[in-house]
Image: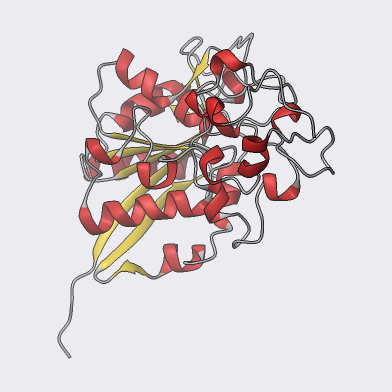
Length: 304
């Protein structure tokens, strides 16, 4: 039998200021399962080699830090860097978050993202915290936490960046973009929106595909979570949120936020959570897109 070569796609996964929820979400991928992603050939002739993930790996201490540095040195320009969590930018001493040491001194998350990011093939910012700062960057933000993009711009690093926001992101969004990179290369600029999110997953407003959209057009608004009607009065952020949650659903297609009678909280958007807070407060007409004119004015909902 003829022997075929398998291409190893090296992945380094940094966990910065986060709750590990993004990793947990990806680990719950159903089709393909995470065991298939990590152990099998993702596509014919191609295998993912996850060389560093502080939550999943058995190793610890200096040995795994050497693994990061040696892997990056041997695969310059060839590895995929996944960043989970916001990056504290206050100070360089690692007091607000560090990943290992170098010569006995802590190496801050900020420094790791810069050193590994500038030599990566592509950076995937997984989750809203990594993409835009998210909850760690909410006011008053004493650690000056921020997203990957702002660090790359500040340091003039030109490595391609793909944002996969969500709190947490859907596993399909991450697996989908990873498979695309392996099969057809990095997505072009036309495949990403202005926030560097793949349009395939973040191309439509949740409001456009919401099963309660008809209520909105008719001016029927729920006053309690258990009632039928549009959830705008209860703080739904679907009219300003771009994601395919209404058609993809979560937990292997079982349900999603609005299907569970919870308003959308806009967790994939750059302003989350400050811009959309309080989460149960109704959107004002001045920040709604033009779709508000499709039905009754949002500020004066029609009676039932």
